[in-house]
Length: 314
Image (cartoon, rainbow, N blue to C red; front, side):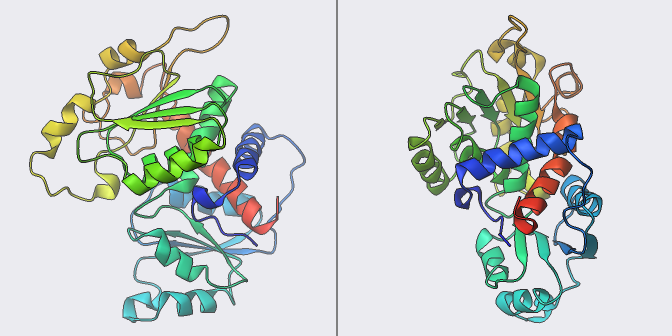
């Protein structure tokens, strides 16, 4: 039994293994086994979710597990029971608990303070690690590699961006350039962790706030919804600050590399849901460079790989 709470806790070789396993699941490679048969997976989402909740539920079922779903008010955490007591109780029933919350990973560590039930972070306020696995799978499938791939991330330094930074930092030669409005970047501690991890891998993670100084010839342009999980921003003028960071066809043309020698050019990614006309235009999201909906599919293959890694020791 293993927990999957933060990519900072996952060894580089395990992250690469999860990516490769996800690809095999997507391609139907290998015997049709049910590695989680006899297991019970709890899915506890305190916030709305279309993709991640469905991905983990369907993924667990396809792997042979039984699933029990909890709504935001179903557990007695809402009546004052402590997080650690709740974890100890659920560990007597469940083999894994998949949780999404607007709180930090520390709450999840309280649930993980037992030795019988795996806890999977399906998004916290500070990191979305399973999303980053799906991102790497999508890039690996589309480009045929992760090494020497340059990702340009535009928008807010949110939990998806934090997970992406920690993931890229583990891949030799991979680069991430994060460009955000001033005051909306990745937290300093996330950048510091990513750079420490990158020091040992030859990867590169950098951040700045100048949309007029974007790198060219990048392999991937990535953006996310500017209001993470619909949480409002305190600055009434925030939309004006974000507007120049929207991904348009003109921006894609400005930073893209052409297809050469059979290698694909620049692709576009978005973790969805998208606010069309805000962080991305329709012509980009629905255009030939977009992998956003394939990326959404890989939320399920990556969920299956993570559950298998946690419970079956794969």
